[in-house]
Amino acid sequence: MAALTFQSLKNALVWLFLCGLALSPPVWGRPATFLQDFRVTWSDAHIRQIDGGRAIQLILDQNSGCGFASKSKYLFGRVSMKIKLVPGDSAGTVTAFYMNSDTDTVRDELDFEFLGNRTGQPYTVQTNVYAHGKGDREQRVNLWFDPAADFHTYSIMWNHHHVVFSVDDVPIRVYKNNEARGLPYPKFQPMGVFSTLWEADDWATRGGLEKIDWRRAPFYAYYKDFDIEGCAVPGSGACASNPSNWWEASAYQQLSAVEARRYRWVRVNHMIYDYCTDKSRYPVTPPECEAGI
Image 1 (cartoon, rainbow, N blue to C red):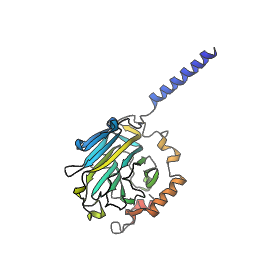
Image 2: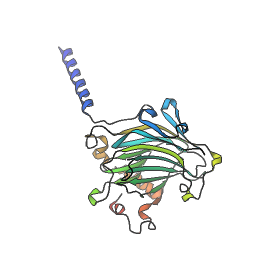
Image 3: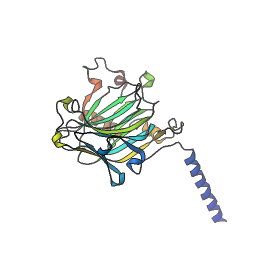
Image 4: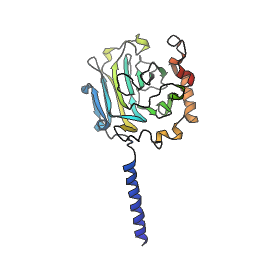
């Protein structure tokens, strides 16, 4: 009788678990291989799969750069990748990792852009936020390590409260939802995940003063551990508004005390440009800067 009771309980728990899976919104996790959740969008010959597709190599030469994108779009969640950037003299190259609504008129976009450098100089990462078609919100940070020597984790966490850009779990930028003050926030349009390696020596390094040295081509960047956890679109309409999604929990609605200290450390010691303080571009401080980003 005891065995029967235990088996009945076990069956009931399994049934509840399966029902939970059936009723849960579609929250997707890390793909087993690159091609499971991504596709090449530009120059297939310049993207090589490594280790059975668990890692990839992006190639830039005088013929072409390259790019890839997620097969689905997502509305809220977190996306992260481990990237090893172009080593040595990478001036004029840009490695980009970003989310984009891929809409022509009213675009939403969340950008990481890694700006190449001359050998021995710090690597600069530029972030930007487009909300309801309005961008030009650049901030630049000099990374405090050599991002070409090994893989580092770059992530974008996006919920109803804020967008957080992080490097190895250190927040480098926060864009808060200030809709209550009449400021735009990306929350209606799903976004795909994109990445590209390309030549942009008209602006990328020291404002275009440093040009790409094609004698050092080809240039390589490496990616692995592609991790997307979010509400896939098309999918359950209830997912994006579900307060039970882990990224909507109270712990993720604002930075923790430790994260806030790290964030201040980055801004004090490593930020080299902030559009909020650029009076040549914005004589009047943009309202989202006064509201607190």
